[in-house]
Length: 244
Image (tube, rainbow, N blue to C red; front, top):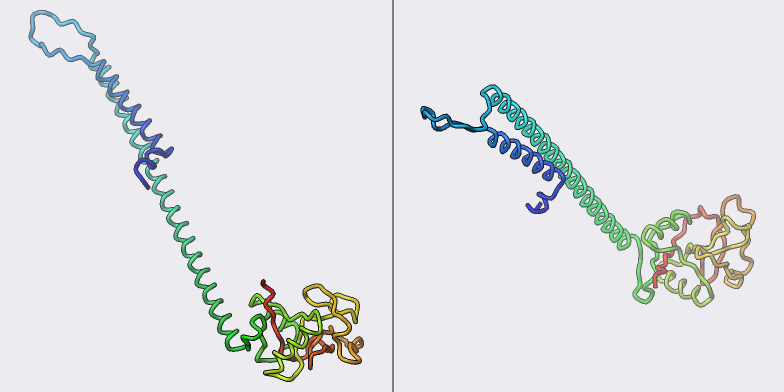
């Protein structure tokens, strides 16, 4: 802390006020004490002198005042020292928290990169798509895509359906989870996680036909068209980056 800033704090303002009081008391005592330096002179020296008893009382009062000021200054310094210690403690705790959070976020980022590199397939021709190297139920697939800032693939038209299948079938010719589901909707009414309804002409012939499933029903793509399956089935899945 700069000296000028420190001197302007309320604590030091109080200290300087106390010192001013002490200085005033000393000046008053000195101004009221006169000593006859002409002892032995035949001519009496008239002065505004005080008696020895009064001088003693004034001195005692002055001493008490100075002791009180000393105690006040000591208390103020202790309070300031305690405040500085607490401030340093909070700064240290804040720094530790910031660095700890930064380290954790960096490790999470490294883990995410490791997972994407080792658990997903990318293709430069489809830069916004990730294909899993492992099978999962629909719920876990949804969670993993969101964890990395993506979303299970949503298919708005036949062109995109064939594009997704072209990408996925290069590595795996099996069912691929999409974001389509009839959860929280009327059974048989399928919606993408983007909120749009699934077009009927995207389904395979005879699909959807899973209205009798006891569990939730979700949509997978195979050979460029959709079919419904219980959401707890284990399939590969495609994540999509929806950022512009």
